[in-house]
Image 1 (cartoon, rainbow, N blue to C red):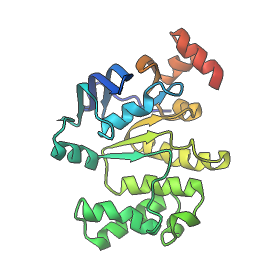
Image 2: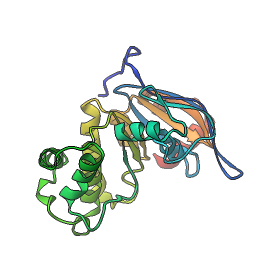
Image 3: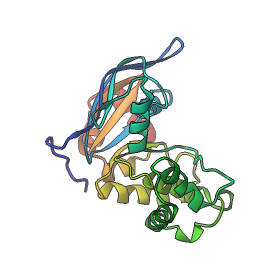
Length: 251
């Protein structure tokens, strides 16, 4: 069962009236969201609802045009120093694994700690091996990404993000590119992270995962947050017709 996060926990992420356009397309329409330390948020919704754009704005992979985004008290504007500070504290796992194909698994995991955090190579490698053990693939450390299954590559991507000791983890449909038999191995790692208290925002249609670990489930449609609630209330008694229609299609 998820641990209920108290209102006294410090704010990790705050979005105030956030808007985002792609040309004439209004992708995010006045998003307000507060995420406290240790909270696990699942974001779901139909294709094109703005859910991936939302989490990409949180580490400035996409720049918002109106409103405010604060991560651990740092406001994301155009100051590159602030953007780099936020990115160093926020891990992101994508649909595609984005591993460097010419580097081994261990080298992929050590690259950012060595170059960004200036961690000595020996310490970076020790940490990487501990995290590869945590995601249950230490034996793959000296292989190249192309020698691994999709599920293994996604677990490497999670370990690589954890090597930077992030305070927040963002997941953008991390299982959508995987074969069905590989999904569980990735979700199991994410469930362990959640139980260890990691602050997480996850865009996913894996509703079993949402029921297991989420403190809140957010439903987006048309660039807006339509509904948010505890998993129990969200699945048992959705308030909005759009939410009920969406759940009837995926459950």
